Length: 192
Image (cartoon, rainbow, N blue to C red; front, side):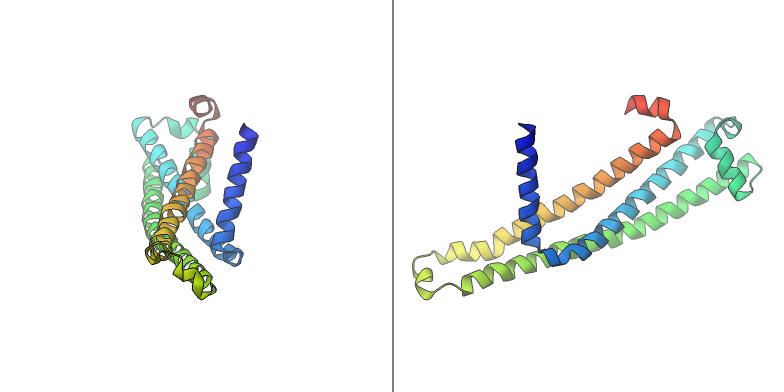
């Protein structure tokens, strides 16, 4: 059962890749790179927020946490206030950069989706133009127009854009899971 579902998913991914076009793999890789970068900035922001909250509620964590101690040594910080300030600056910088990049990635995702829509419309229109004249005498023109406009639009926005959003959110969840296990493997590994 599971093997059949995996094969079905693999066939669907192959069909989607064929529809999108194999020559767009570079554009896809660049988009995934930017989505990964935004996900990593999410993790940095959450990590800095968690550490600042921990240090504010329990200042003894400075001496107990090896991560915070290594952070202090790397930046040559000796005081608790300096550590909190440095983490807040990192949090602010990561949040601002993440917001800027998220806007950029969102625009890139929509451009990718619209380029896919244009490509599909050209392919459908090219398929119709290669048909002999009698083909059009037996077909409903409303169905052909619907295929050319609505169906390609539904595919590009309904499948491609939602798949890109799902991939972006999966990166965030995956990186946050790895980060939480890295910070405290016993506590966070049991929770996850």
